[in-house]
Length: 354
Image (tube, rainbow, N blue to C red):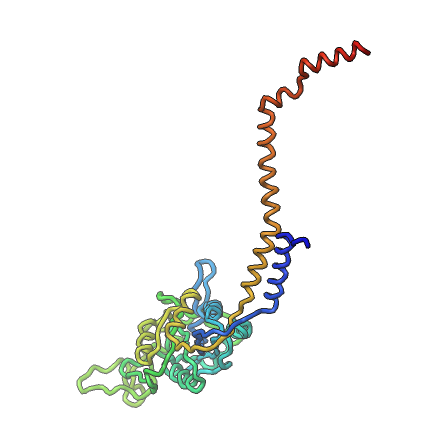
């Protein structure tokens, strides 16, 4: 019985390996995954444009919509991500965590669909919103990502300490600072959602008037316009609250008070690494697809089957001109066209006989 040659074995092996790859074999392995809920600030200051190049600046909200899905897609399969929004002093959960690989298209579509028009009020009480976000994620059992520029409106009072009703050691997650460090104007929109300019100093409160008025000590200089009954805070001072930049010091202070980490919104790879560094890893058994291994083996078999004759053909074409030159240069080849003297005599004798 004739044995099959190597070509038959190569094509047979490629067919077998391709069939195995089509069956998508997999094994179970333990992998560190993460359950997180991301709350995105959609207040007016997130419309400020300080991302992107000089010719086409990008708003902060646009930067979140572009970079957050890419970062989520870099988390290990088996991780889960939920989405919510923040405005005024409350948060709203859009959906609970779902698988970042199997449901990535739905997650990406929801993030890219975020819009500042979803906001229900114009204030931005970030500390209060963060407290509610922590309270909302606790029953879910997920960690927290809070993406904001840290610009509170009205600004927090410096004479009142901000406190959080949480257990610091039990909170895991990340505060993500969005925006540049240089102050930029905040776009203003009309009732139809069309941009109509920028906020001026008189358009926004430059100081907080929330809570009881401060107690002035005897002999202390009272603020301008002070009236004990009608204006216990005095006149509204001048300021730059109509301009905005990422409030990193404020966010770091909040993070220290709550136990959350802090990172700036940069490239997606750095954001994914920050999430993994600050969220709690949850080891679970996940399927690991092995179909790439037999598929690669089939590719090698086909490369050997079709590549070996091609390589031999190329070597033959390279050797053929050299062989012609060598044969043309040999002494025997030069005498091929000359007739020996003995042959000439035999030819002449034969002609005489004839």
